[in-house]
Amino acid sequence: MLLTKTIVISEGEPVTVDEVKVSARIDDDIDELDGQIETLIQSVRLTAEHECERVFQPHTIQLAYDAWPGGPLPVPPEAESATAEIFDGAKWVEAPSTLFRYLEGTFAIVPTVELPPLPDDGSECVRIAVQVGCPANVRAYIIAMASHQLTTATAARPANPPAYLAGLLDRERNWA
Image (cartoon, rainbow, N blue to C red):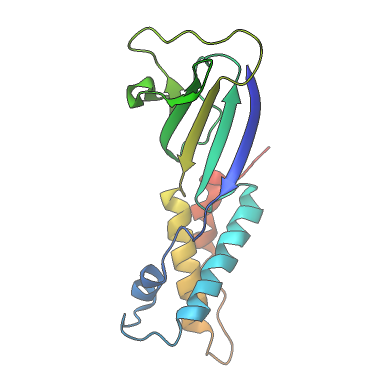
């Protein structure tokens, strides 16, 4: 049974200043705008997170179980890698990387060998850390919106971004 689920946000953004510069056709050796571009990236990411009710900044989901979990882990499909630790009764040891398979759009424990026995006292004995990135469509949205805002910022009447850019977030939105 899942005992706890914790999200730890990583430093940094899912998009780099250089990616926005390429999209905005700004030479990479021009660095006067780098601070402004970093702010735009963060602002657009926060807007996307608000609109989709999800975290798009790279993060780690830490799961703690009192037994071996069965089936898919409760993580989004952007999960990039997973590691596990097992309490052997005396100390925490790293589980083999072959323990995980990418199954049905998420990670799952699919034992290829017999799983080691765990204490049966209801305490935390399996810890799983899943690294989660940002979906490609959201990265494209952040780059396009930041680039648009950057290139129209100096216009007397800045143009609104093309409406189709918002569609890049549709797959991630909570439609319920």
